[in-house]
Length: 87
Image (cartoon, rainbow, N blue to C red; front, side, top):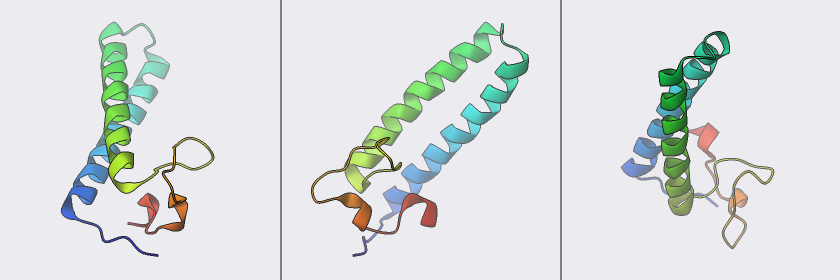
């Protein structure tokens, strides 16, 4: 079974990728600068925004992560493709 993807799908997926990139960079920075309060606040804000973005994406398009990290609606959504890492 295949899902027709719209422009919003790609925009939201790109936004998630941007959050993930920024969070990885901040993680690396904070590993060497653990007392930088401003960076830590930015990390936490981005993590919260990323979480909201992921929830909105999953409600509309299905789960992003497997193994219990994302909920699935009925019927089981992992049977639908393409999966986020395939686009």
